[in-house]
Length: 284
Image (spheres, one colour):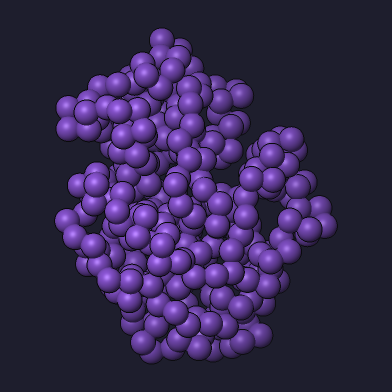
């Protein structure tokens, strides 16, 4: 039996992994796959891939591309979610801020440097025409729980996170939603450490075949809306809207999509140079 570890955020996007693990499907191909939740998100998982704490990660596209260009010994093997991630831009419920424009020059609360919440703050600032050098500032709060605790205290002014994950905290406090910022590319990819790709690409291929079989018809899974609503504390109508906007993928990231990500990271001066496609993507 081969033992592998995979990491991801504990959010509804990753329910297919939970189901395949619950059904012990990887044991059929002689693989003992273990899942680890990373509440700190992409920055946390990049560190875990670098250290070998995990072998694989379901991770934000822009975050892992940035980290691979900066030495993370991993490759992207396929897209997991093909649709954009819709980042909600949140402030404290009792805040006087009511629009994105009000946040110009204020502090973005981020989980960590290099995280999705950090990188997308740059994308949002650029969308708004802000002076990134002088009108974009940061406060590290570690994760969603850190934002829930700190924003009401005035530690950080706004916080960007996937809008359906935070919806219960907008409905019931302590957040207020002032706008959205979708990613301009497929949002989640599957990244694998180079050592595993070199030593056992067949095992990686087998794991992908199992998860892809589940995601292909995931929306037609009996009772899936109710399951997501209960497991992730969501309203059925929010789950239905989220499912209508979300598309799982079974294909590799295209060269054009990779170029778009690297071009944006370069433009925002978040990376120093562009890597060749074969240094970021691994085709099984």
